[in-house]
Amino acid sequence: MPSAEQYLQPEVLAKVARFDLKAKFIIEGFFSGLHRSPFKGFSAEFSDHRKYVPGDDIKDLDWKVYARTNKYYIKRFQAETNLECHLVVDASASMGYGTRGLTKLEYATYIAAALAFLVVSQQDTVGLITFDDAIRAVLQPKSKRKHIIRILKVLNATRPGRRAKVSELLHKVAGMIDKRGLVVVMSDLLDETADVIDAFAHLRYAGHDVIAFHILDAAEAQFPFSEARRFEDVETGETVVADAGSVRAGYLDALGQFIETYRTELYKHRVDFFNIDTSMSFDKALMAYLMKRSGR
Picture 1 (cartoon, helix red, strand yellow):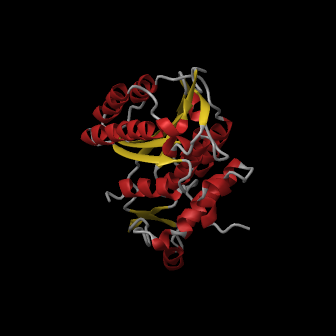
Picture 2 (tube, helix red, strand yellow; picture 1 turned 180 degrees about the vertical axis):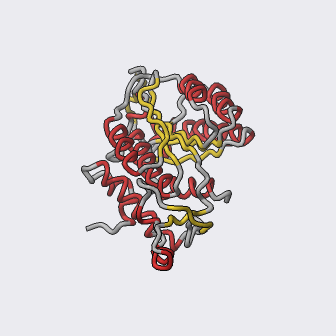
Picture 3 (cartoon, helix red, strand yellow; picture 1 turned 60 degrees about the vertical axis):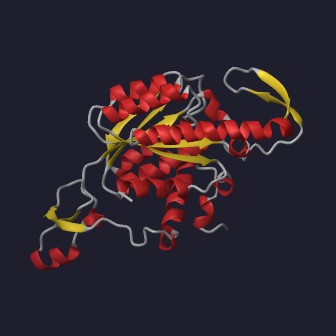
């Protein structure tokens, strides 16, 4: 039986059948490893009390106050900022590529599910938007734990769709969100870089705090091929035969420039950019989120 922290490894989690368990295993594994992270003891700081109202989570009741006053009070924390978080998942055709037992889209949905749990645990609201060539699903932000079940159901049913113009869809997302908050985008960003950067600038111009998780498959990131083979574009179906060993250096150089362009240009717009691939443990994404939320 794998330990909680082993479920942070994509190849281990891929063997779990139920989607809700995948998200819970990621969260449990992440928190079990926090003692080795810069976030030892990460928690909200106690602020004050307010009276209990029906619907409040009873785990937040202060039983010591009840023992003294015979009245129910809820503990409030400074982290109760009413942050509105939107998780934006790219479900376009290219996200269906995968070589390690899970696709980029599956990796993204696992991260999104874990982040949903994490956001609600921070007493913030979380919503979900998915897209391919159009907006496919929208769940407005809420903070109730039962809302996570709705998010999990949508993520579990999300499949790779059609070819997408990522920049156009991000512009649409920017126009859909009225209240300023945190927007977390999970995508391979396979589009014209200048157009995508402009779309992220639109999100920032609207006043949102923005995190971009740039997700690649491990094979895309590392290009472990050596012999002649046929490569196919999963969105257009176009194929090309090439000697992998001969083109590897050029491919990795072009990929490095592609990633660095996003990193440097998005930094100018104060968008936090995190490049990850499907061989990386899920705690990297969660730690990046916490670093952003804690102001480093």
